[in-house]
Amino acid sequence: MRMQVRFWGTRGSIATPGAATVRYGGNTSCVEVRSDAGDIVLIDCGTGAHALGQMLLKEMKPCSGHILISHTHWDHIQGLPFFAPLFVPGNEWHIYGPRGLGKSLRDVFAGQMEYTYFPVALNAFAATLHFHEVVEGGFAIGNMRIATHYLNHPALTVGYRLEADGASLVYASDHEPHSAEAAHGHAAAIEGRDIAHADFMRDADLVIHDAQYTAAEYDAKVGWGHSTMEYAVDAAIAANVKHLALFHHDPSRTDDAVDKLLDAARIRVAQAGSTLEVSGASEGRVFNLHGRGDAEKFARYMPSSLVKPTRDVAEELILIAGVSATERDMLAAAAAADGIRSVPDVSFDDIKRALQNGESSLIFLGDDLPDGDPIALVRTLRALERGSDVPIIVVTHQSKINAQEGEAAGVTEWLSWPYSVQYARSRIRAWLMRSMLRWRKAALPDHEEERLKALHKLNLLDTETEERFDRHARIAAAALNAPIALITLVDRDRQWFKSHLGFDFSETPRDIGFCSHAVLADAPLVVNDALTDDRFAENPAVVGDPHVRFYAGIPLHAGGACVGALCIVDHKPRNLSPAQFRMLHDIARLVEQEMDPQAEVKAS
Ligand SMILES: [Zn+2]
Ligand SMILES: [Zn+2]
Image (cartoon, rainbow, N blue to C red):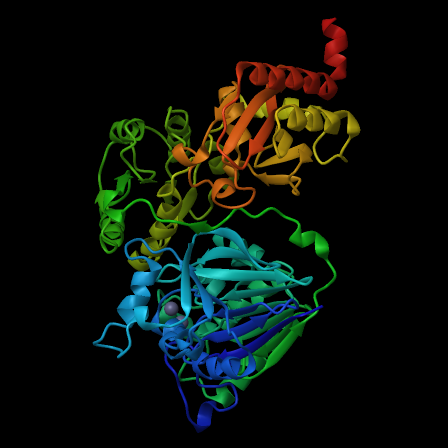
């Protein structure tokens, strides 16, 4: 069992043929991946895709597969119109790429093939093409699981993590460190967004990472959207990666210069006392990944990232409050560059009103407001009836942020000065993507900390499955003729299932949970058809696994708090009769007795 990875293009920015680049290669980004089951996945479609297409056509018939596009800069898509398998009838190709704010993915490719630039139009491809737009999350190709993660680049860019056959590969190009210190090679500065980036690569067998510059070159390249070799190495070490391939070589970097870069990288690894292996990505090189036999890491539920755009970016509105005039202008410029409206200087009351009326899509809060410190203000906003809908970004000049308190208050993320317009623009796109979807995560209930205390006191989280609970799930599913029944405990950031009948995973993120909504309201929740409900229509659990259409959940109480829900789920829209509803209710009371038998003794 193995995953095979082969480089067809390793160069960044522009194809660079010639004697000086013959060893590492002059073609732009293109990587071929094959799973043991024979699925073919290309990552990026730079000029290297031309030779790959020729080879594939000779080898297989029909010649079908999948193409993952990180972003639509030239060097990552220029090979697409020259990828011969797309011209052959009977072939079928799926193309995945980040969902942009304006044009659809298909339109972007059609634009690249306008007659001014290319003699054949996109719709003249004889193969059947399917376009899939992705946000952060995951999806599957055959037995391969793909996770996506936003990178920091002037264009909206996603990194891909591929897992199959016990092996894992991460492709992270093009990406600029969030922290300038980390870009300069201070390993300790890998924290916040940069540690989130490292986490995406965690324990991977092979990471293909942007290493276009060196720390010494970085000052002249700030905001260009690329990593330094030092950052790539430090992040890979922090993420316990097995092998790092330096990728997206600068066009001016000769083979000898890449050799030097590689030497420096290996010295850096040795100095850190790490066992990380490093190589320079070179055209034609093949990696056979056998994995580390760690099947556990593949068992995590991943919310679907495949989405269909329903709203237009022109409908979005960004509100900015309490930031300096300079930053106001920068944020407004960053929004305007993507055609997004913003109001750069509003009061806190304006924000409250806009939230109540559902008028804003994204909020920036600075620390220059008369109404109080931003974390307290976020807490106030989140307590509003529609306060959970919108990302709230706290803009700060402080070097040390209180991330934990901020998270508890409901801060979506921090934007720390200094940053560039370019950086703000790419972050704004990523933040808006979520709020533009038709789904809302549940707000935190009042007295959340006491609620969690009551939940943790039960000592049920992360325990083995138990027949005394499973039988109730089984009865609920049978009595109500539902394919899925769950006994859900809503923890700080996850829904953990004490019983999960008809659903393979033991937990999902709290954000996507239906039960989180039932717990918030502390009232039964029945969703007859998720697709017609704005709170759930584009929820990843509706769009992807387990494809929820119908949901009915009854809150579960223990220690005076609402700790979870008993629910049934179906893949088709449904209604519950009053008798069925009562039955679900009765079973929920039985589950409560199992959860907290002592409370029952006291009561009786
Ligand atoms: Zn590039
Ligand atoms: Zn790029």
